[in-house]
Length: 175
Image (tube, rainbow, N blue to C red; front, side):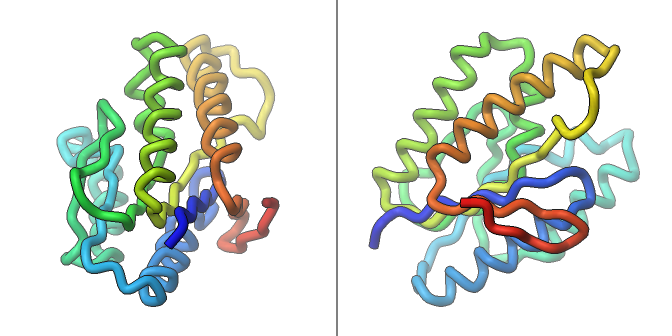
């Protein structure tokens, strides 16, 4: 089978994760993949002192199959040695954790990750956080995140076969 990369792009509480998970599960049924990986970019240690974040993580965990293997990609994007079915939710936390790194290095790592997915003929559904719908923030760190996140999203969308935008739980295909 050929690689199929699909992105779901949306803001906070847009429904992008639920939509992406549903699409991923339906495509899995057709491909009959035996090993499924969930690429986690936000780990539970980040929620130790944040009960609201803990609830969000728990909700995501409850929706996915316990048979899926979790690969933590909080600092580095990595694929396990084997497997061809991947759901990543979402790219934004990985970008945020990479703000102290070189932008060129971060984007190169993302480019290498996308190339590895294609080389492996993977099914990959990637959830992207849209942070650039408002005006220019007065907060420097927020501006840096929005700029880098936007560049990362453009790189991913350029590599994807399909792009869906989520708004209020409704997905609209734009590519």
